[in-house]
Amino acid sequence: MKFSEKLQTLRKNNKLSQEQLADMLDVSRQAVSKWEGGQTYPEMDKLLSMCKIFGCTLDDLTNDEIKEISNNYRNKNITSNLVDELLDIINRTCKIFRNLKLKNILKIIFEMIIVVIILLLFNIPVQYIYSLGVDIFMNFGLKIGNILSSIFNFVLSVIYIILSIIIFIYVYKIRVLDHYEKLNLNENTLVKKDKVVDLKEKDNILENNQPIRKEVIIKKERNYVIFKVLGSIVMWCIKIFIIFLSLPFIFSLLMLFASLIIDIIIIFKGVFYFGIFLGILSCITLNIGILTIIFNFIFNRSNDVKKLFIMFLVSLSTLGIAIGITTWDITNINFIEGVPNSFKLEKYETNYEMNNELVIIDYYHNINFKVDEHLGNNLKIEINYYSDYENYYTSCEDNHYIFIHQKETMTSLNKLVNSLLDDLANKRIHFYEGLSNNEITVSATSKNIDILKNNIDNYNRELEERYENSTIEYYRNMINDYEEKINSLHIEYDEKIDVMENEKRDLEEEINNLKEQITEYKNTIKDYKDTISSILNN
Image 1 (cartoon, helix red, strand yellow):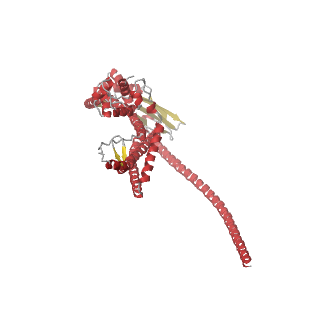
Image 2: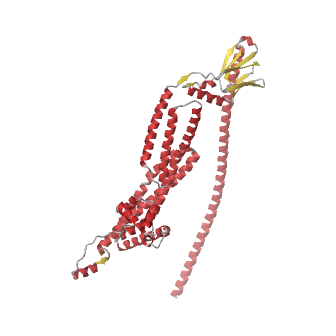
Image 3: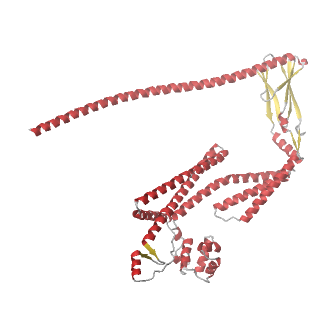
């Protein structure tokens, strides 16, 4: 494979245009085009730059006998390259510190401490961002919010740590390694174009009256893989963070599509509000545009800025028009007091024999009493209700309690939806809450009504007393439980105190025994010393 074909293949495999490659090599696009067309051949420095860009060897790039370029050079032991470069940094550091004075070393340490303090201060805005994220995630519920908050904290911490490492190493490289190597180079060497001349050699040249050429110094930059690896990790963490941020947009897109389907179904039912339909479509378009930007960022794809700008502009304009049309439609809707005519009002009637202990119980409605002296010792219960929405019936237990039961019908939801759709189609809204405003009337003689009211009041007071007594009993039981726990803790405390006092006495006895042994040993040592002294004196 010829060089021109290899260059074109490598450029396309790396997803680079001729303009982008030309910018990276600091040449014109026409020069790259001539290289790929086989008209000209690049210079050696451009070939070396291409090897770095494409991750291949010079032999792979220029040898026509090699048909395919292996990626082993690029992917070869990134870990080992990383270790080598770390060792190179350590080696350069040792060489520099070996030639530095103590004052300069302390200066470097002080500067690096300042850098660390600044990086630690950057943790304050990071924690603020984390608190904002927690506030957002808690809206999804406690369990899901805790999970998302933990993941968000982990990703944010990883990004902060890696960025701090990158910044610290980069500052150390620029401020220490490059700076002091440059100083050392200026003090000890004279650089020519192709070789380095020592100062001793410079003196020899001057003695022989040979001219010294002033050449341009070309500084070779050190590109460390460690920055690329850490940068890649940071980018992946950012991408994971962006993915989590995109979840609400994905969920809202699903809800918008569901709303669109429901709106289409409603349109077939004869209800069409153009503003709502247009608003749903514009919101879907906005969500798709935002998710497109997120998708392209995650998979390193370029955005068509022109198309996205037109999409957002049209979507926002359409959304504004939709809001205006919907507002106009709402102002034209007539609000009608009362329930729709399709719901029929029915009456439930029943009679019970009166006694002095009878109580009527209804937990949902107020009871209206009506005097009817013709009923004698009977009472009549009348309930006006909408049977399509709910049903009522009564029951009597022990000839003492009359319960009024409420039961929703199975067809109520279907009829409510159809009635609401009919209202919307005709630009009107009825007062649907009136379906639950039912009247319960109890008719009896004035004497029996007084007895019923008195029984109901007594029954309600009994309920309140039962509730108060049960509440008091509950808290008394809680108090008893805690008192028992306190007593058990006191017993446990006393037991532990006894154990510790026994241990203390044992330790004191052991200490006294040890003191006696020490005194005994001292006396023995004294006797031995006296014996030695007497022997020496004799």
